[in-house]
Image (tube, rainbow, N blue to C red):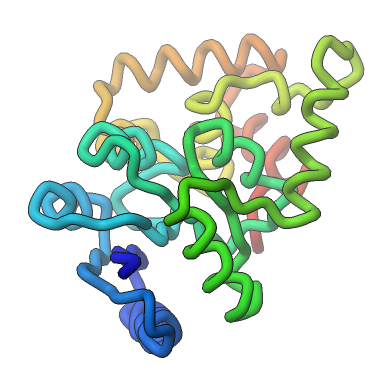
Length: 213
């Protein structure tokens, strides 16, 4: 039996996912969480094979929660199920330790297949994600890549968070870091991108369509 944890801050989405996966005879839901904090509290108490994780939680930033999941349950598979298009976050999610990535607009069959493959210790890559990974490898060493593609994972997450109107203090709380540490990330990403202010970051994020809406 494949034991799954569902993580999403919308109960309707969790309910829909539960109904979907529990129609399968070999999959059962053993826990649900609506926030990063509730997932951190839940994981030590249960045994699970796969976490189906929404990365847009109200108390977390980007992919930072993946680090906590891997620390609390080494070896557990994580399927990132996100509103973000695959060409924005998928490669970074895989590089950060996710076993698979799907947009929420994906089909029910894709979700079930992804859960089964991840539970078997495999990665689940859609053709789009596989192509993006290949392009990432090809672009290494090129000088013509967009500035945001050269950022570290933390720097990129902070860029998108600030671009969406988030503050340094909020980012520190959600990333479980000190304000000084987050300010250091901000200083580094500004220097790498040759920008001067948060307003510049917002304009950059909007211009390059790095967030929805």
